[in-house]
Image (cartoon, rainbow, N blue to C red; front, top):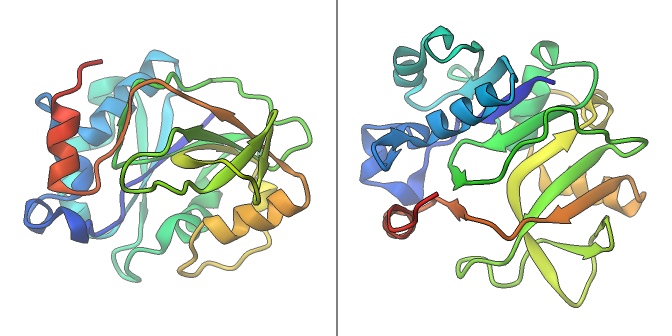
Length: 220
């Protein structure tokens, strides 16, 4: 399995920290956010990692290099000329580097102790989403969960963690553009092609300095 870490965003809400440091390089417990993911992926023998870059992307390249320091191969999907393409747009641009089989995508600005699955079997589904209990900043959640199926309508909804397993078929008819991921997922959910599971371990969306401080008080 190949993995992609989304690292192209500007991180407006993280300012002023993100004025000089790309959000994926902001540190928690003396380690950049993106490096937590890379080390966990390497520990599972996921050795090929695609990272998309835009804002301050040169600093990400300078820090991570080719990934050999951590026993992985990093391929950069460069969005600096176009500007960040949002989640789905970034995945679409990177498709030539991703597997023709299931691949993993994780947001570069989340911090968690979720254990990625190296051999995730989607079956006939187009995606599997990892959902988490709703944090304070997203009290209404994003998707419902009916047994193992993601739903668009439910009395109780959970927050999409930014971690998902995808079949490239979900994206390969779409043109490269600035595209958010949620509408694409909702269409697939309406066709009953998306599974999901609830993860209740440590998970933080490091979207603001205040959330960073909360995460810093957490240990994994």
